[in-house]
Length: 265
Image (tube, rainbow, N blue to C red; front, top):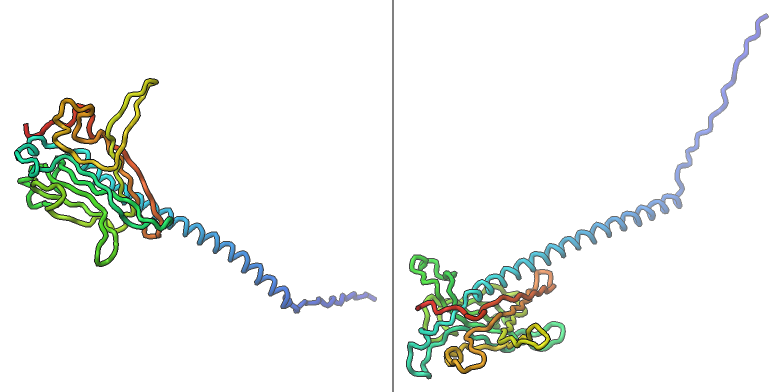
């Protein structure tokens, strides 16, 4: 007789218990920590990128403003015959370069008022403010730069003034435009003379004020016979949209003897 063997399958246990509440809480906490670290790193990188971009934009704007000023100064002229056209000394025409200092905006760190420069000069450039007169442009104008407080808004404005025609007063006349409301520093230092040193090299004598005078220019007995500074150092600072301030300084040579010749000769 044939035996038939049958196998009885074992019962398979199925675990339906799942995760406990404690395990879920631990998982959520760990996930939250990881996500917070990732978001923190992302926002830090994003903020750094925005700050760097803002600083670069502010520095680019500052360099553009400085370039405008230095381009005008690079062509400064002392008009000897223009000044001597009037016989009376009291009515003598102003020419060359005039630089002055006055109190300006408050320093945010020290709380004290800082000195700022104002400068007025004749320069042989094309007009920037009179485009309708470009066909009759003599390319010789009065130009001035100053940092002035607006009496209505109490905001310090960086102003460029240009007079198309030359007159007796180098400080007034023409059109004025606000180039920026974010300039916090405008300083000019002018190289008055250079003294040779015994051991070699030169000692530079700088000043913060200047007034070209015909008497000094034509006086052959003067030790330093010059009408214009040898060089100008321009220092400016600009406040960016993020509240941070960037500053820069540049030096240009103006007058290496013999200085600029009289352009009316």
